[in-house]
Each structure stands twice: as C-alpha cells, then as structure tokens.
Image (cartoon, rainbow, N blue to C red):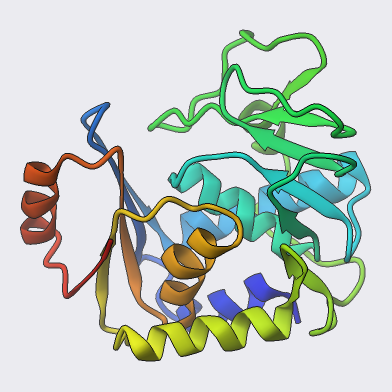
Length: 234
C-alpha cells in the first residue's frame, strides 16, 4: 500500500474534518483544507503524474517547494502513485518548482503557483515549464493505482514506504501526537527531514496540521490561540 493510502486511511470517516490549515504570514493569508479537499488534490496530482508523465512506482520526482498546502497535495499525489520524492532534480521524471523557479536536469518542470486560493499561473509560464495547477485540476478527484506500491518501494530520499512510516510513527510518539492533536508547525519542508517531521509524522498520528510559512513570531502566538493548538513544532 502506498504511503498516501496508509496516511489518509484513518481520516476516511471524517471527510469534512480540517486536515491542513495554511498560514502565510508574509502574505497575510489563511487557507483551510478538509480531508476531502486535500485528498482530491492528491488524487489529481497522482492522475496527472501517471497519465501525463508515465510515473510508476520507484520513479523519482523532485519537490523544490516551501511548506504550503499545494506542496502537501504534490507530496501526497507523488506518493500515491509510488513515486520517490527527492531534493535533487537531476534525472527526475518531474521537478516541482515555485513560480519563476528552475530545475536543470529534470525531464519535466512543473511550476506550482502557491496561490492561496488555488489559482493557476494565468498564462505566465516560461517556455519549457508546465503550469501544475492548470493541468492537474483537469484530472480526476479519485485515483486508482495502476500497480501496487510495495512497502519496500523508495518514497523519500532513498527511504522506503515502510521505513518512513516507522520513522514517522516514532516521531509522533516522541512528540506525543494523537488523533486529537491540533499541531502548529513552522518547520520548512526540506527533503527528507522537514517533510518527515513537519508533515508525515503529523498525518501518521491522525492529527490535524496548522502550517505557518514565513512565520511572524507575534502572529504565530495568535494563530496558536485561534486554532486551539495543542502541540507546536518549531
């Protein structure tokens, strides 16, 4: 079973539950994604990777993105179809970059708008780059994997699905995360450490995440109060 299926399965009975709440303190934005909405973005991403880029279990994709709700959709989509997420874009099937970013050596480069409302780049796409939001949103809201994803499939910088799940559960236990936890994190989603600590461990516990990008210390305290946070990761 893929990492994404394993992580999202405990949330299946609560599709309307807030799963990822994203603040960007520099932009002054707040976006809340339910379980169903994030799952839909993950499915769209997985379908797009398989149908447009022939990604199969074990293929590599690079994420050169900040901690953001769109990044969560990218990561979960990549893992759902069995891709290995890496930091180095050299010789990967797809490299996901922020607007204006580049990734020399990738077979395809996808610019992620990082727009708080999920809007695409509205035509402002450099030659040789595809607009991830514009393309992925055309794909289905559910994903049926064309091939199983064994537990020994690499999924994050060389580590397998089974080993990442085990590491994430250990971290969740250390941080005393549970399904009732409301976790605020200011961690950057570096690959692999930041992604493991700031995203996968939270989902492995069945908790909900309040992710703050470009954190303002004064506002972070306010966010924690507003969101009724129980655990903070910094």
